[in-house]
Length: 497
Ligand code: ADP
Image (tube, rainbow, N blue to C red; front, side):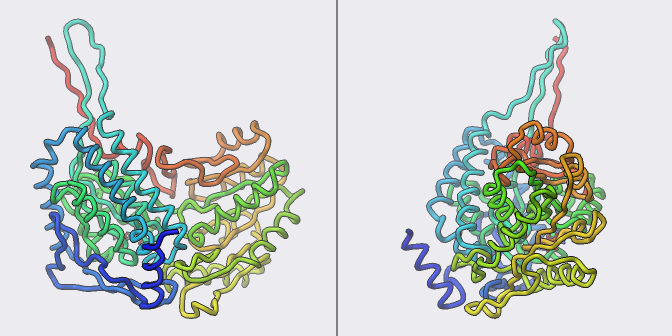
């Protein structure tokens, strides 16, 4: 139990906001107002009401942030040794842990996610900085044998100024998984958090400054995608873009990056299959399916949003699943219910639209299917945990990313059909399988097109494991040592001796 956390939760629930939230962009080591003076509001999804204002940035703020990042690279940060960079990141990890309660409560209030999940995200953010702190001085090139008359070697140089476009579903953890390797590699950063969830990224930048990161190395510009995100991705002085968000916006970002030949990593959507074979441990599989789709009310690109299940166990499994859902509590994220709100009114309308379309098309709804109005949070944005039977592979409920607590069920006969079902969408982010038969598990892992495959535990692993997608789910990898390479440019040096 934490007294600090409890009093912050009480303050937020009693007053509808929190005192001491960061205000302004964080540019060159300090908070500044927008040059054009613009302001926006952020909403508490559990109450469906605004709780705090923040700066609405424009191209002028982006210019200032990128210029600060350039200066920082030309200064002390550019000369810091890898070990010194690692020490700063370790101090930041410690400061994140020292401020974990406040970060988690702000994250929960701003995004709507359950407080326990926000606490997990904060722990994950601290781990990301700790992991890459340890990697900063182990990132080395290779020597290349060219015979007695030459010396050849490669150098991993920092790519320069790295732009980070961050989504609203995992504001702090997405920021950390991109910014930690960028800093470890020696880059400077300009981050643009989502306009729905600006606060924890600003808090992170301030903590980084307190940890000893020189001014200008880590800047944050808040505001909309159009006014602040687009000028950042279109900036000629940006050397790399890490974008996490929707496919449509990702395509736009890629088109913009192409104008300047800017390198990028795209982490886009998913419609990830979770196969449950007849030989699986039924309790572990049930828990796994629940977690895969209800984590953050289904608003996670790697959600296991399609249950691919063997016919012989399908009816019993779906009955148990539907039964478990009946009892799930729904409410404000800070009260730690089983299911929290979705992030915005627009997102709620989108989820409801998908489910209404399925109902109209005749899909059987095994559980849920409607907007929820919990008695203690009647004005918040909630959707019932929902299970929908699919009508074949072309069914929109199978093909379209819903980004909410809606599970589509595809019934199959045997492993080959499970693999075919797993591969039936344009996305290729994650795939999971529950089975006691390791040959089946590995065959599935090899045959499914996905950036990562989870066997007998969905979401297994952490910052150590490379993460990313194929096809419409994007390209490039974050996390792990692979994530560090995004922020490096390789130089080959050959000398005749
Ligand atoms: P959603 O549609 O769910 O809000 P987006 O993919 O549009 O998801 O948003 C993800 C992030 O991309 C947010 O930080 C958003 O502000 C930003 N963004 C939106 N449009 C653009 C754009 N044209 N250029 C750069 N960033 C953008």
